[in-house]
Image (cartoon, rainbow, N blue to C red):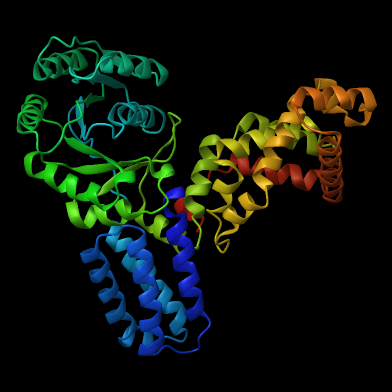
Length: 455
């Protein structure tokens, strides 16, 4: 997650200096906290929040909690993790949909924050993961083509859409949509509203009327992470007019600072419930403060990695690969391409690496060493082959190689490197007993142990 790259690098570097110490003193704690303070300020965390956080860490670190520990340095790291988690809200706060359907979710925010796309992403999340029947409606009668944009997105995410006209009053649109949602037995109605400034009293008054007309159980403020700590102040201003229930943080993939995520809960008093992690329609994830704190400190995020694997790994392809191993069949380039595709679906190599505990900044190192580009190049080369060539790379002669490299825009050296790596993988597979490997993979597909019981 790009939003925490710089902060994570600075904090892990600072805390590494203290982690090897057998004991802690006020002096080495003070020096480390000075560096932590600088890292937080550079991450655009509000100064009052930084002061409060540093003071809480210092008081706990110098107290009996650390002095009585057998590993004071490790306990200090635990304190930093706990305080970061508390700052962001302690735990994920799920949507409250415990109401007679349709449950109404009102989406509000500033202009350009990404409200319409976020509304569609939220619909996709509720349809795919919560198995809800969702309807979308646009109450934005000001932005050109806003209604049409939401209609297109509704179709993309398989949500129902309530049509409206920009000549109608927003509150009348919402009332009609609510009645339609009841008739169609919709579980959740998501209302997209026009972007507005908190200083625009007329538009804020209109937003209050929309809220009163549909009585939403959730009123979510869409917050652009690129605006840093100012975003949290804006959410607090909106909350004075509108009873917000939570925040959706968008564009976190475009900001490497993290100030908005670390500041929003403390300043606005409202929990971050979701984060938009990319441009794809599936790129909306629940916000888990404890997991984010762990990743910031270089401790990984295995729970999120497992959840992504359970959602995105193609079970049929995995079962097919397991069956090949059971029968003693060779691992071919078709299989390698499938694995590269699934790795991309899970956020790519860097997205997976950053969630592994103890990895630290290897994701950045992988980028620097061009490893990510090499995986992409491998996939392009395999795509340029015929099915027969992918199943049996031994038939690749000079003319075939020239055709493949010309079609993929790569070199003979790139192709030879891929074949060499493939052969090395094949040798590794042969060292493992086919039956054992097949059973292991089949077990991953059939034993659906709840995540909470795996740790």
